[in-house]
Image (cartoon, rainbow, N blue to C red):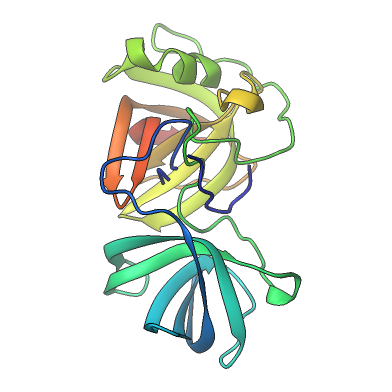
Length: 236
């Protein structure tokens, strides 16, 4: 899977081969004229003039200009969303992707955490990753061991050495990292693990992550993750 938000059937699917939570809203396509453009690290916020009134959308960094007509595909609404980078709260913002060949989108690892409805957070990188040696010690697990063994690991601390394949910084006060170590399968999402942390890392870094396994995490507006490692420490 790539950086786009997609509907499977996050949440934030994060969210994952699991069903949408109660009150979830299906993605839609938002269309309109760009009235305002706000760029921050990893994101482009767009105020659109739509048929039903003004609406805010957030996409991965894109070359969109004021006055352009755009379509935001797979748009998922999030209410009362606070952007730390912009120091403002949006009553509602739609997270999605700029659609169309002429959109000029330039993905930069931003956007909401993807992998909606796929157990480990979804394959953030479509290319198979070279194996990364497993960490040592009683807490050590591979990505696949965490994803596949999530029920038994619930609320337990794990140590994972893996490669960062996608980064979403500054969402809900945390950085969201997709990790892969060559274990697991893209077909069932067991090759990709989602981690939240105050620490930062870049795509391509091989990191040692230590945090607590959480399962069935629901963030509202239909965003629910089947498994993630929360509030982790990240060391390079």
